[in-house]
Length: 217
Image 1 (cartoon, rainbow, N blue to C red):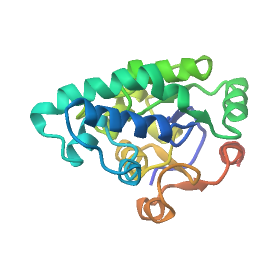
Image 2 (image 1 turned 90 degrees about the horizontal axis):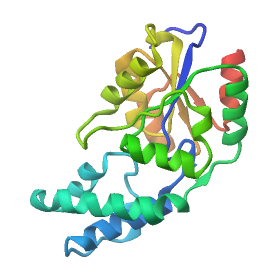
Image 3 (image 1 turned 90 degrees about the vertical axis):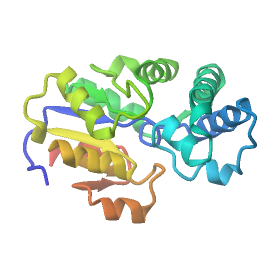
């Protein structure tokens, strides 16, 4: 477990942490699968694992390897045109980011989205102004640990133990732990309570303001 102490920066996941983006993501998955001539499964299946890189999830749904590049391209095209507009900000997130900015905490992202898509959705929802660094995957196989590591580099953080990673899935927690970063799980996202308990974050918060309580604690 990363040791407590002063906080030098905060890194956020996006989907399920800052934004409820499930509707647009699920619609994108269905559009991607149809684009390669396959029938998508029910929405309940498409919602079952929001968080992994798109290519990995589509492969797990049975999209053949040779069709994955086309399916991923179709997903990204749909998402940029229609999907990201369907996302909505979780209550309290905007206030949290404004407050962190006032307190002069450098903020970054570490998301399974491609970096250009991550920036586009933050711009769409007027959140980009809060972030010093916007970083995501540079390829479908990039792990959350590698993404967090790159965000730390871009933020200029030399002591990971002074950084907080905020996310809603087990990958956010395990990625933070692998980097020596303090892991804060949020209960309002896509990870179940059982998943988050198993991941053993340093802290679990139930409202965005809970992060401020941790920082002032």
